[in-house]
Image 1 (cartoon, rainbow, N blue to C red):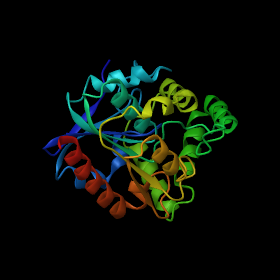
Image 2: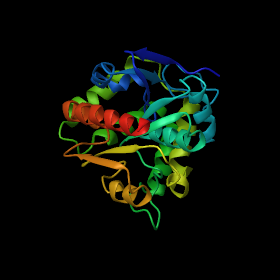
Image 3: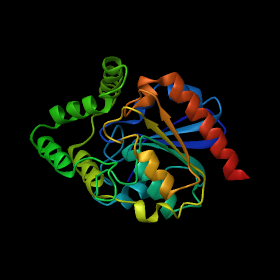
Length: 262
């Protein structure tokens, strides 16, 4: 199996994983900022962008293993949304490979539970899956709308998200379906506390997919984690609030890296 990887800059490797239905082109200007200090490695998840769909199964570890095959033995990992869940699992499965972990509007559990109110309604996500089966393109466009809902600059952010899809190969149907399955069923809360490396979490105040409330529960699971919430930010704060997000990401990666070597 082969995943597409693009490299920018030099220095400590920084693996960046995009979210469901997107591709590595979504990071935009964040790459320019971070590549001034790091070797930024943009990975297309299985079945997304230029990557094959072979590893796009309903098993999270298959996605993780595919990424581990194409990135350096040691790196800082940064994941957005579903990409963040892949990064979390990689850090749990192969802690020696992940020097530090940065999450952008991600969570160890996307579905609301009786003890986890910071999640999506399961039935709502299941209905979305049914729409995906009926009309993939329409469902994907609707999901893009959900990503920017509540953000202070919805229209321009939505435009940039759409452009990132248009400029690359569209995600395969099987990758969308298996990725949605992972969002519905993967739950890393019970093991998240095992993470010993530095972790940093970035949230958007207006995010409707991964509520800012998640930050409170991350503190309970990982008391030493760094947490930042971007005011008026949505699910893609690096697009709606690029300057604030890039400054925060640059600082967090630097602090995380320092913590990883001290």
